Amino acid sequence: MYDATFAESITITGHGGDTIEAYSARPLDSAPRGGVVVIHHMPGYDIQTKEIARNFAAHGYNAVVPNLYHREAPGASPDDAAATARAQGGVPDDRLVGDVAGGVAYLKGLSNSNGKVATIGYCSGGRQSFLAAVSLQLDAAVDCYGAFVTGEAREGTTMVPIVDKTPTLSCPLLGLFGNDDQYPSPAQVDELEEALKANGKTYEFHRYDGAGHAFFAVNRPSYRPEAATDGWQKIFAFYGKHLSA
Image 1: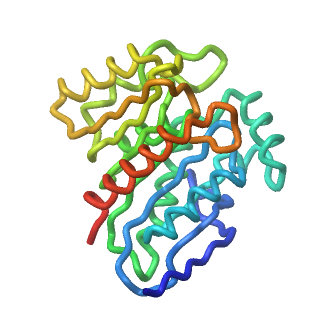
Image 2 (image 1 turned 45 degrees about the vertical axis):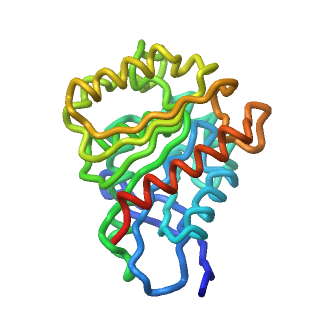
Image 3 (image 1 turned 120 degrees about the vertical axis):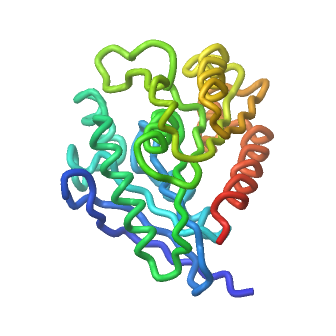
């Protein structure tokens, strides 16, 4: 079986027609493929997020990572760009939606696209994955411990609760959460689940004991191998169901 992949830095058209940096990873064959927009976490457009995109390509998906901080600090290191973006309160919600829409358009424009696209995000990106799914027409979305979907707003940032947008969720949602997390806390996850139930939405939540925030992050003390391994299995099963041709 031919399993070569190709990854590169590219540019895409984001919110307001802006040209922004992105990272693309895809299988090198002509078989029809679903696409995944990978939304990076608050620490930024870093090597760990690019590795996630390459992992999706190795599993047969086209993937793209928009650099959400490109406008604040083009060419800067992930740490410096993230610091600049945080100092400005984070990424505005309307801009995020426009940048993800640009990623969706890029994926659908690939010659091997099967026309189906999902999002995935971690931490702030988990909230933004949900935001994209209630704002755009997607085929699936994954929220990995997205903070401030429910609960209270985070002072000084753009992160306000968006659970009221649940009625416009356009696709099935997979949520992966640690029971030791505080943002989101188990009670906040419960609040989101109740909103999904109340609005008749298709969703699948998995919660992990002994795991807190960022349990997928292999380069942090918060990494929990058992939870992360099971979470990846859940992600690929979910995408296999909703992104197949």
